[in-house]
Image (cartoon, rainbow, N blue to C red):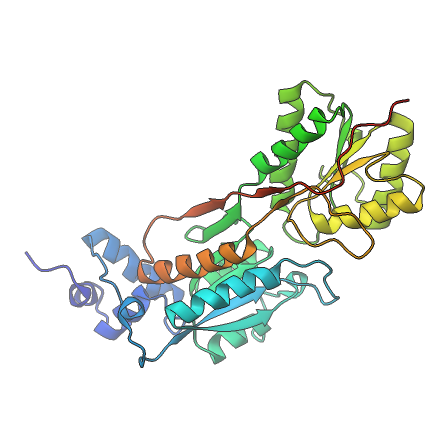
Length: 350
């Protein structure tokens, strides 16, 4: 029986040994069709790829490059989490002797039909061997990147097969926050998010934790106490969110709000205070991410996400995916930790 190696795969497909080697490493110079054929034949023959140069390289060996694609809009992003993720990626890259090439790309501007797309041009120019995606991108854009190189996504899930995911275990974390609000005496609790042009699966996952907690505690659920989640509901701007929350607080006595993220919670606190509603004396507010509060605001009760650890794990997972491109898809969930904060208090007696 012939030994299952790269030479045998090359013979079966009438390809060169070099093409097979590059296909198994998901090299962007090889067409997606060829790489797919090689990887399918490797799986069919039971080929087990030995640890590659990534695992064996020495101090003087040549490094390779991976791309980090950060989905940020053209305007400035307040209270962003990606710098912490990127810090973790860079720290792990030094250990793995991997070069990191960062590309900032507004998700809404990613045109998969354009031959001059910035991400694809940077991928070819710097010979990326893999990519880490930070923040949501359109599914077609993700499919395009993944068709060329090994890809890992951070904090967002995609339907595209073969893309590993490093994410936060969202629902249990939100459930914990709602239980703490309930323990403080709140019986009417709302959920608020902002709208986003692309993605937003993380909002739905955090909302699911909110719903689970309400039902678990026997608390009232009302759809009009949920802002910017339902697909067919009015999509409110951050300013309109503050106005709506203030109105519901006065009309329905909703005394606590769960925000899907800290960058939503702190502006909401500012808006409420500007309208004479004190946090937490009148209304409690929770966030998510554990970010530092803006000057003049109390620290939100929140869930701290270990962003640097997530970045480090993403780089490790990408290197493993490059070595074993046909291995089953992985989804790794990282637990968030409570930040006690100062924004939960018992509801005011009326």
